[in-house]
Length: 196
Image 1 (cartoon, rainbow, N blue to C red):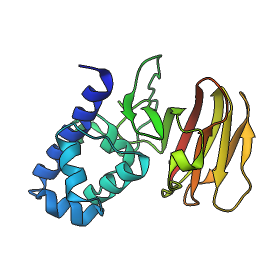
Image 2 (cartoon, rainbow, N blue to C red):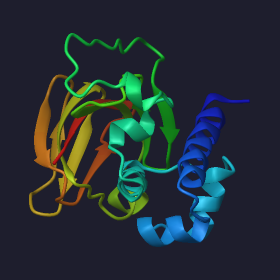
Image 3 (spheres, rainbow, N blue to C red):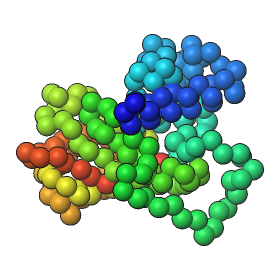
């Protein structure tokens, strides 16, 4: 089994576990999250993965933080109200892989259940806005840094801008945005999202 399918199945299992713990039907989750029932069914069966925006909708429907949703299931009593001295390593190849048409997301440090920031190592796959589709929006602020290739940032309010390795941007993620591969080879960014 390939890694992306395994992670897709893990996400589906996580949704199913949270849904069943609340005694919700798929229809109820669809109503609470605004995600079509057919999409949720495919995700629960490991046939489809969700992008950042959709994961955020699911976590809000379950009333858990984004980081809690992505973290492995841990007993609630093991999470302290004001954790201090914590560390999580983002080693090469670690994190939860979620593949979509637009991006390959590697959600890093997902072993920490409660955290303020969501670090993501992300491959930008689309080369044009037509290929990308609708701009993404989510309730966060984010900093992105190009770590490989060239990335063109599109937003709904500003002119597009191409960034090279070592260059970045800080944006209000509620504004529609897209990160496009602006080069010949692969394009990768590190994105740190802070939910607002």
